[in-house]
Image (cartoon, rainbow, N blue to C red; front, side, top):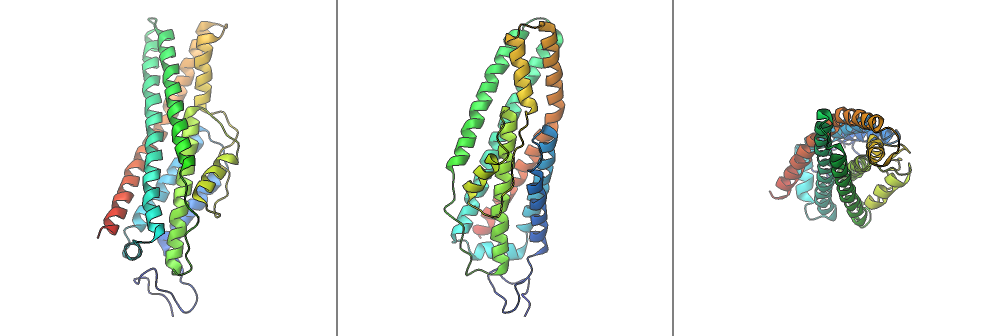
Length: 290
């Protein structure tokens, strides 16, 4: 007897397990591509590509929340622990997205101020560079705090699904993995913006342990010096290097122009994601409150 797709997720078939809904399968395809992308470097262009994949994933999840069978499953299991974790996870992801977005925007504003001074060539560059270096310290401190908060947040084990139907199990697994991959991508972005690097395995393991899921095991960051790390080096050279001041200033200006063009996609991608994360959380709250 085949399972009627209009029935509740928790209804079980007496024959073979029913196939997950096509939207769940589509979301899992997006997840697989994102996991594969975590094997690549964390250059700005690579991260921009990952953000694009994350956008596609969350649009798919948003569509999934519009399905009557998804809404019925969430409403029926609204008192279950996994639904509480889903709510907490949506807020956690929003917080990390906000921290990432704010760090990028703050750095971009300081870059524009420095570029404006340098283009006028009327002096004041050294003072503005000092100001920018101070702002970079503020950004790095904020990112470090956000990452520490991420480490301190944990789930208490995997959710038991022995008494749940195949569709519910598929939904739970999908939404857990969406949070893992989303947090991992934001973590990579924050480390990129701060100009720090991390071993290929440790970053992904950190987030995987955080979520305590055994289904995700990809590496996260390649040993790669980000464009922001190169910017920090250029700023330091202008302040402390004994080589030609003009040469150092030209290198700094070139690096600023390079990052300005590269970060535009990241900024737009983060804003897009932020809007969709809010829409998904609102949809979830509406489902549970009706």
